[in-house]
Length: 153
Image (tube, rainbow, N blue to C red; front, side):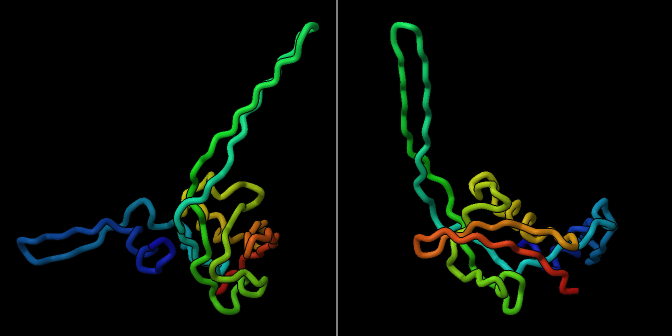
């Protein structure tokens, strides 16, 4: 999983396996000096099926004789991103974000524009003083939160 300490360590090495001599080794790779990442927001996300969204397309044309207006509405299915867990006493927990909340947007960008790994990276990117705007849907109501990730190490 993204964010697991073991994965953060192993991605920094190429694993060498010598089956003939029953040996295992590690060799540093290009990720060796990259910054460690971990969950600084306290939110774990997951995909929970698909939601239906309307897609509007409009075209207008006018001339001195007539005005033409054409509109079409399509339906699109996009993945729903939900909160799987909120770590106790984390920045998300202090704000009141709850398990089962639907994440609608991050920094005013729809969550449908990102995959799960990108969303996790965005909400767990730690820079001191960084603010992340989250739009959450809970029981049919949209709530806005200003999340300030906190370095816990």
